[in-house]
Image 1 (cartoon, protein in one colour):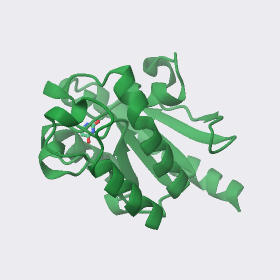
Image 2 (cartoon, helix red, strand yellow):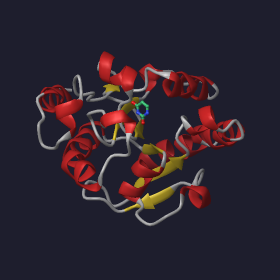
Image 3 (tube, protein in one colour):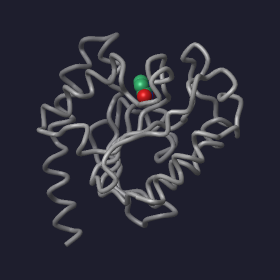
Image 4 (cartoon, helix red, strand yellow):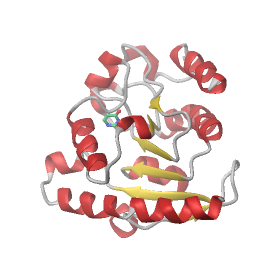
Amino acid sequence: MADLEALRAKILKCRLCRLCEGATQAVPGEGNPDADIFFIGEAPGKNEDLQGEPFVGAAGKFLNELLESINLKREDIFITNIVKHRPPNNRDPKDDEIEACFPYLDQQIQAIKPLLIVTLGRHAMNRFMPGLQISKVHGQAKRVKSIFSKKQVIYPLYHPASALYNGAMRPVLFEDMKKIPVLLQQLRKEAL
Ligand code: URA
């Protein structure tokens, strides 16, 4: 908890890349410091930039619906983004921005030690599983080697915002979400 608070303070003051210049404030992330599930989105949007909290706009509302569908609340999870400042006009984050911000994400993961990391969208997925296509691997858990764990489990999902533009994504996201409780149960057993 102390680690997370210290990190939050550091992120709020961050000037490691150009993104801080156009943003209102940093959006460090929030949630349960003891969470078993850690969600990673892409970048703060307009509402997140104004409020300083992740996933508070339309994509966040749909994410809440997805969580409710498996009896989870935002208080049960930790959630953050691959970059902590809003990119201008919501453009995609650039590689050097993602690179500059990654140590924060890495330290947040180390502080929380989640059983499961759920990536939302291709940017977050690519950070852990470079070169894969989200259309091929969404809804399939993979163990990846990372500096903090030899077997961190990553579960890639489409970004909830994709369903706001393309209604056909809604059922796909609900179906992929459905697999999380079973996966978690399995990981909790392994952790005993
Ligand atoms: N989309 C994201 O990826 N992150 C947010 O915080 C909001 C929308």
